Amino acid sequence: MTLSESVNSNPISSKSKINWGKMEEAEDFAATVKLYRQGKFDEDSFRRYRLQHGAYGTRMTNDYAMVRIKLPAGEVYPYQLEKISQLSEQFSIGSAHFSTRENIQLHWVVLEDVSEILRGLADVGLTSREACGNSVRNVMCSPLSGVCPDEEFDSTPYALATARFFLRNPLSQSLPRKFKFNFTCCEKHGMVRMVDVGLISQTRDLDGSTQKGFKIFLGGGLGNKSFVGHQLEEFTPEEDLLYTSIAVIRIFDRLGDRKNMARNRMRYLVNDMGWEKFRNLVLKERAIVRATQSVVTRLDVDHAPNLIKRPIQISDESGGSIPEGYARWIKTSTLKQKQSEYHSVFITLEAGDITSNQLISLASIIQEFSSEGNARTGFIQNIAIRYVHEEDLPRLYSKLLGVGLAKSGSLTMAAPVGCSGTTSCNLALTNSHRLAKEIQRKFLELKLDQDDDLSDSSIKISGCPNACAQHGIATIGFFGGGGRVGKEMYPNYQMSLGGRSDGETTLGSTCHRIPAKRVIPVILKIIELFKENKKSNDTLKDWLHRIINGKEDTAIKSMHDMKIALDFLTIPPTKEEDPDFYNDYGSDSSYHTKTGKGECAA
Image 1 (cartoon, rainbow, N blue to C red):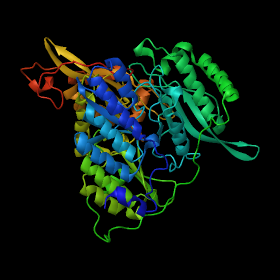
Image 2 (image 1 turned 90 degrees about the horizontal axis):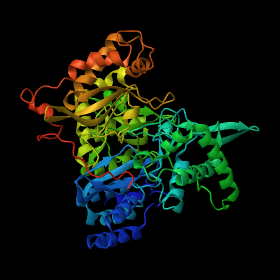
Image 3 (image 1 turned 90 degrees about the vertical axis):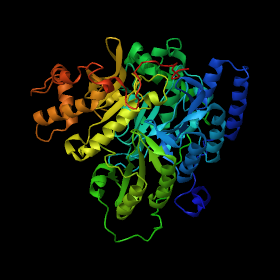
Image 4 (image 1 turned 180 degrees about the vertical axis):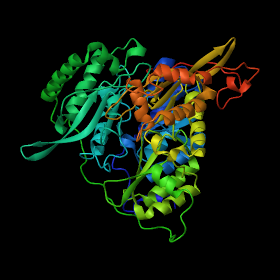
């Protein structure tokens, strides 16, 4: 009996409360592909249609697509993972990729098979609709919302309600560019200042009672030019959440730049207009929305509490010895929840990749160990299994170990984020995906995941300046490019240092161009310099933050000093001296910077 057949037999593993899918969209997609192949649908119109339905172009070909599956608020259920595993085996490459925006991606899907995937997703209440294109993208919510000790209240129901309101909504089908919401529990866990609309749950005392609301940030975003968002007002009551969201989208739709693709995200509009003028416009537009919208235009927020019930133990394993590596895994991949005796367990992936067989195993593990019956995807290409009882942690670790999902370091610098890079993306200049995996393997080998001085730092690697891997807010960030020695080209990365996305959100400062094959030695050298110059109780994140703000007083006082200290590692050898230097990771052929047409704003 499969999980999808048995899901209703377990009271905590019920199906998702929301059905996001529509079977008729799969049928329509199949018919539209036929028209396109017959030449009855022009290229540009089909591209826009394809993107609206979550099928992104694949590198250098029109015959394959990447299907991006939306997981609003990051919620995913065991039977849904089982279905995604089946679809990956049948129509993709036998694996799936977890993105930085709580989506799951299936790569190298034959265009004619996309409709089959859409049918399969609709079967289990999932969709890829508006996962790409110029619309409201997947509405994110921190995987710690509901369990974070520092939160005011759980913002998950509001994230789900927002996603449901804007999905297929005519208001958001043809925006100047993509539009992103992030909900979170606290300042540390959600990148709320780095998206179009970021929201932190908040309460205030009003006439002796507690009023729910949000702290809202507008106009942030990462890319070739990044901006940190601005706080709209001190407190936004929950009844104004939808009015504010509609107001912001209406302004962006009306005033956003539809001609210049390089400057048509909302952050450019805010920057060009000036924050105070934009803020006043939002507040005025909100008043208009509040006065003119029908009473039926409201967020359908489900306040019913999740059923939390510890699963019945399926196996009779008990009393055995704890496998080697358990203490390291507990330290670097789990967090205590605010709920007594429960932990959230973060599954470490390599640059977001998981095989279809591992997805099946993961579905079973969630069924067996999560007291809420589902999992949450996150912002850093991992998976959170929440409400795991502390007595079940050793048994869970053994299960994960058996299916290759027990790597430590998920919550540390030893789990770099890497976009798909040249493995599939039209715009990528380097194989950032493979580089992230190489760094992870090296760091785990060196046991750097156990170093407390590095635990709150991050490494994020994008294959181009567009920041899909969030390199601009990384402690050590990279984006790909090309270098040249004479007629020979080699892959390299622009490195930035000191970025962060917490209460002191800061964009990283540009430091140096690093050849791809020298990235790992450069990171290790930075760590070495940190150890030599650190103050007591310093972390790498603190040290680099002081350097970029001109507040460090040791041998490395500035980015200029850091650049000089790293210069020797950036000098390229001749091709005769080191032929491998001129190849990118995962390639044995000559490096080049050929790219295809980007579809971020098609």
